[in-house]
Amino acid sequence: MNSPRTTLYKDPYNKKLMGVCAGIADYTGVNALWVRLGAVFLTFASSGFLIVLYLIAGFLLNKKPAHHYVDHEEQKYWQRVRQSPKRTAREIRAKMKDIDRRLADVETYYVSSNPRLTAEIERLR
Amino acid sequence: MDEVFIVAVIFIALPWIMLHYITKWKTSATITSDDEVLLEELYNLAKRLDDRMDTVERLVAADNPDYRPARLVHDSEADNQQLRELDRLLAEKKGASK
Image (cartoon, rainbow over all chains, first blue to last red; front, side, top):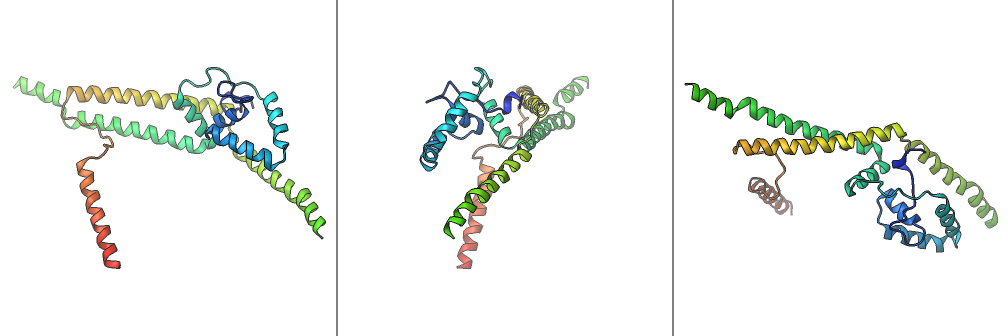
């Protein structure tokens, strides 16, 4: 567990109490409000046992580094990676294929109807 | 009889469920730090290539006004025409089956 991108942190920047719920929200991509509501519900359901777990997690988890992600898009990307690395790999492949197709379009345009070459030929006549 | 059932639930079913999900979690969510570095590189590469492709398409479009980059266009008339046709056929089929 020494990989920084797939480690669970507590999030001290969006915290309400100790940042555990915000950390879980950041890890999974679920809205922090739902995580907190679920935590409150489970506290009642487990008759207070979750508070102990919360405190343990609050003291054990490391703080999230200040500039963990460059932008919001990257944060979303890593949330998807944590949910399913396989699906993310497929998404990257789809993106690469899309770029390949667009490049092929440009290439086809220049090969089949090269306007500059036509203009040069016209001038030589 | 009731007590036996409760004890069985607490000492057999509960650990069973927990261990089941722990093993599932351990076998599924294995992504090593090497994989992570690879994924990060791929992400950055894809993003860079996408940006470059945008630039190239813009340059080509600026040089040649008749070049149109193939993009998904929102609410274009050619697509709407076909969609209307499809809607009409579906409505006809629904009317016929009734």
